[in-house]
Image 1 (cartoon, rainbow, N blue to C red):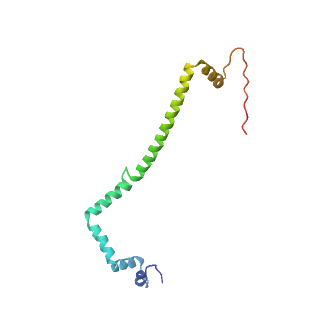
Image 2: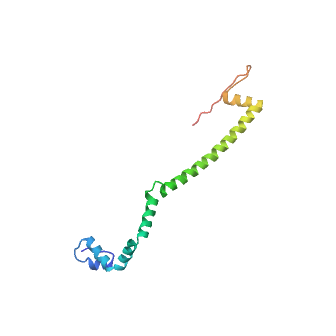
Image 3: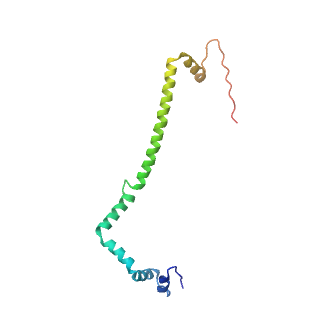
Length: 130
């Protein structure tokens, strides 16, 4: 004999019945809950509204899940935009300095491209990474 958590279910199903039949019998005893469900299903506006919300939340091309993904993607893009604007500002100031100051231009050429004057020698010291 099976034991179920619900007392009425145990009472109805103490003999060997199909569980589906037991559920149907239980629904007949708790007819108040069944009446609430059937009265809800008879209201065509409530059913249509529920179906509409389910469709919008899960099945539509602009469903709630894709909207959340788009919001997170938009936030990431705003962060990237701010980062690149800062980088553009730094690069434009460095470019301005290089164009208008010959000492900084010479320093940049010596450090970046290892350029030298005719009477100079360059010794490059590279530290090994461990």
